[in-house]
Length: 298
Image (cartoon, rainbow, N blue to C red; front, side, top):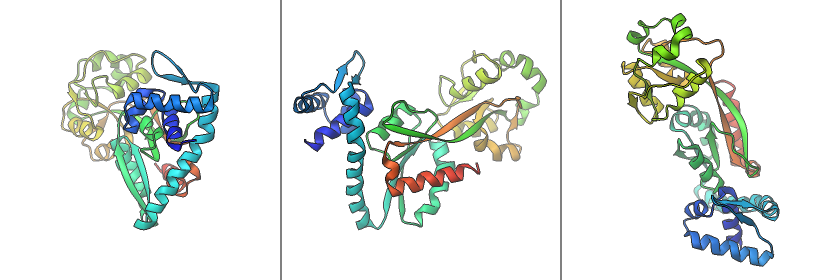
């Protein structure tokens, strides 16, 4: 059986789409379709059911993926080990949101560099793109706030991050925590908000958990990096919802003030995600263990 056909098959299985698999493999969609049909002819069985959006694996397709994927990943590991031996270091490709990866993951992995581990980092805020890249083998380990579906990716809870509603002192002086708890959603609609996206992902999560509603007003400032949101809020541009770890220094230094202390603070869970079976590879397992160890102190 042609290994290139198996590689294409596993990528389609992980991506759930010929189109997406073609993009991940750097092939045309007709080429991917042709390779899958060739493999189906060799096996004498259909591997996918074509749907209006993407494909669904047949039972034979699922069985083949579960049997073949770990071995294909192991072959990649063998090839990379050979390259790594020439360079004197193993390389871990890690991907995740820029802020969390920069401030949490990379410092935690720094001790492994002295032990011969090389790091390559991709900053990706889009969860679907992140998991697609992991499934296609572009990354070894991903940090994400969404648990992937299916069995070809394995997720381990890493840590919970608390979300806090903050503002510069001049805004905080106008707001009473007691009033915010009772009429906060209405009151806050009158104030400027700083966010990472027009969809208000952080404000929406906070509003739903604390006020049991959705924010009605649009953001005044959009900056697609939480560190930029923090700095804009500290400079007085408006209110912001931020992970506590990201703004702890600004809170301690008085540049930002927490506006509310709800009884149950909103949380986001981070997951460590790998392709199933790759924790058998030493360099991925070491990084996985080190991140879990470090997370106990976050």
